[in-house]
Length: 130
Image 1: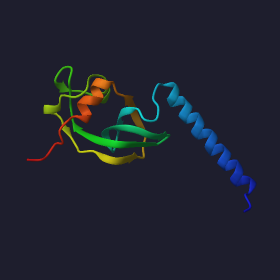
Image 2 (image 1 turned 90 degrees about the horizontal axis):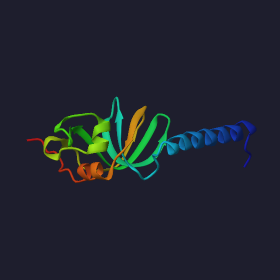
Image 3 (image 1 turned 120 degrees about the vertical axis):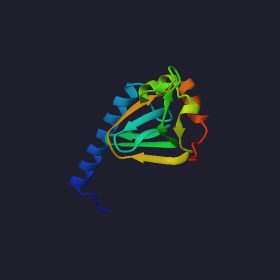
């Protein structure tokens, strides 16, 4: 099997870029396997275990979409950062069931959750339309 020089350079650069991107988010305290909340423009707000992260791509496992959520601290609607810190008020929130994998192909905000916040999201009942 013959590998051309251009292909070899491309593979090297791709690996180097991925490692640089990975090290930058690892430095920020987020690592593979962490329970996170991800907010994107198109996919909305999702929570799950971080499997993969690179520029423009986030992969979560055991993920749930937070259609509407109220932050547990003040019982009002809030933002994704507040939900990652304080958790959600389950009775006022609309959370989907768990899906095995979610891939989001756009830029995103990613927040590592506290253990308390993680529990409120994972234990939230599945919202069912009436």
